[in-house]
Image (tube, rainbow, N blue to C red; front, side, top):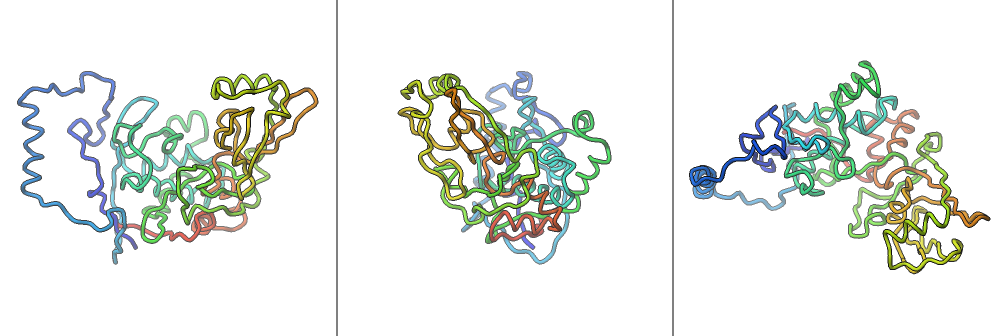
Length: 358
């Protein structure tokens, strides 16, 4: 059992952020006039807090403390909905239902959905603690709904309209409720529970994807069986050399590309998991992640074939950055008898799956 004091890491919002009241950052009517009286009302409480409340010393502000007893509590988080430019405070568990519904197919095995729910909860709470990521793109809210920055999210109405029926929604609700208060930790600290769609058979070390990130002991490469039966496993794309030259010219104008693909496109090195580490396009040396972004590929697990008409066939295996839990792999393991805790420990090396008390 671990204890987390969310009040120590909670963002302090004004009356415009009160529970169940939405705040539109682009609505000028929401702005408070900067009169002398309003400035005094804002500053005076801060001065009193500094005088009357001594700062609390903490050796490790991000470490969770052990607690003997547990209790389920209603915790709220502040979410920035980037699609509507709205900031809102919502119950954590309600928010998680929308995350699981958006991030994992509802057709997946129930234990896989539970694993996704625990990963999503850990993701949110770790961001509330300020352990990972940044809040620059969502105006200080705990998380946002941009999957490129935080986690995706979908409303019940949108889900029922486009993805599933009420039984499917209730299946997701149960996956969240049956894992209530359960998170993933490593040495008493919430982990950074990265996940992706399909690993292509093997996940990746985090430092091989993001070169500015140090090694993380629980985000190590592991073999992920049974993923080849999913549509996300493999995709073949053919590019003409002129198409690639155009893309390279816009992104890397300093690169000098000739007219022969086989001479100016080369994979220089591979990571330990078999993904592209470095590639050469003319005179430009880029990372595998940059190559994936440049060509809009599903992953960096690539097979390159030069065709007779000076075009290039690229076979990508897997879908996503490849770090952490593979969602297709989680579903495959669940179908082979793994429960959600075993799935999480399979993909996050050396972690503990445990319940928290707020």
